[in-house]
Length: 242
Image 1: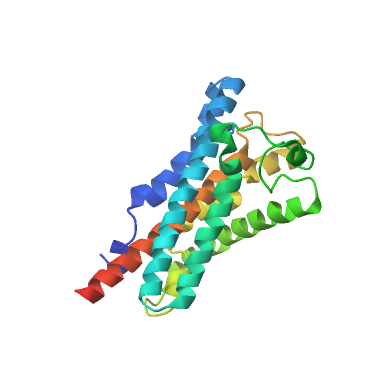
Image 2: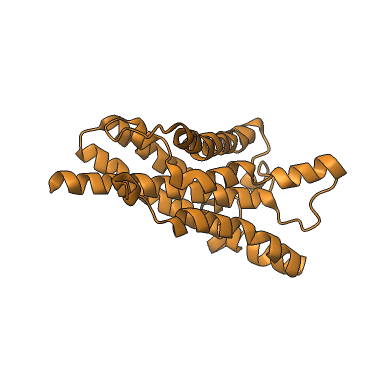
């Protein structure tokens, strides 16, 4: 087995996990009563929403550890990149959980309710134009990055036989093959819903709320990207030390 591949997470984690988490929503939406499905899966305290926060939180820790590792190696640029990734995960996870409101149930201040569409203590649901900048813009950029850099480019490199050079920065910056399933699912998660609406003018009858599933896939993508970088960096550091 190639040494670089051996450093990566196992296939059950990067291949089976994203597929399982995505596909489980269809039979669940089909078999469960809508109120039950909504409560247990896509509500604020459901499996989908909470799973997103969990994966992003783990990605935050891994990105921070990776940033510290590069800082110790004297590579400030890569340390900065993974430090920014950690901050991005903090924002993503914090906003997704309304900074703890969904767990602790505090009441949103009246002044905040006035400009938040869902009366939550977060920024991405604000009524003003800045809400779109803090919601749609970062989400669309992350989705595009997951689809192209995480889902398509690794397949293109494999088809062309172009492996990333471990001595170069792109080896650390670009997602590897372990991000392909999550990257493709994150980028294409809502395609069935959009096709249904375009062809028949109606939402999917099962209504698995694919927008929420898409956010879960983005969380899984960030988790696998950070995990891959951390594992490879740790293996490289151990090899150098040995």
